[in-house]
Image 1 (cartoon, helix red, strand yellow):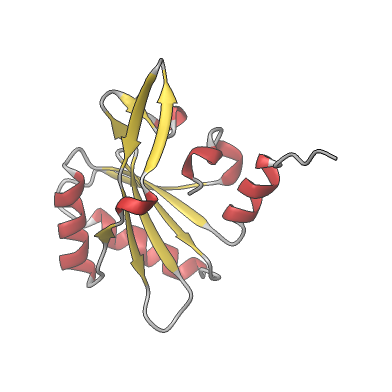
Image 2: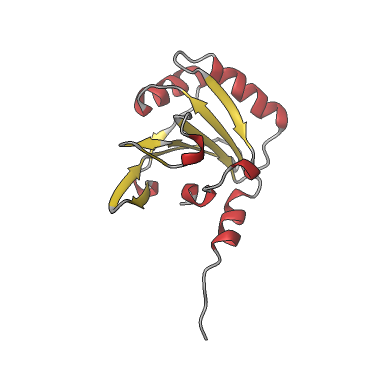
Length: 144
């Protein structure tokens, strides 16, 4: 008997109850995280064990991942750098520099609106948009 891993089921499970924001902010990831931490009172830290590795054109590309566990909830925040050395984690969104994933808990609409509003006030942030699952072609690239 042979078992195959269904990546679609895995990906769908990963994104269940998740919200994803795309952020255009042409600044270094560590500076962006520092500003987010300072202005929003959160504590994003890089997690090298969750780093995303993509193999393209015979090369390996590594995308750092920052994480923050919201106290007193199950909500996890993940911040992906969408670009590394000219390659993109989500090539369909080349104009976005960062992807902010909220998962593992229900996220109310007003929470997302407030977050978007707050992110737009950060120096260097030009655009914040919520990405719907239907628009994301390479969703499996975000699964860790």
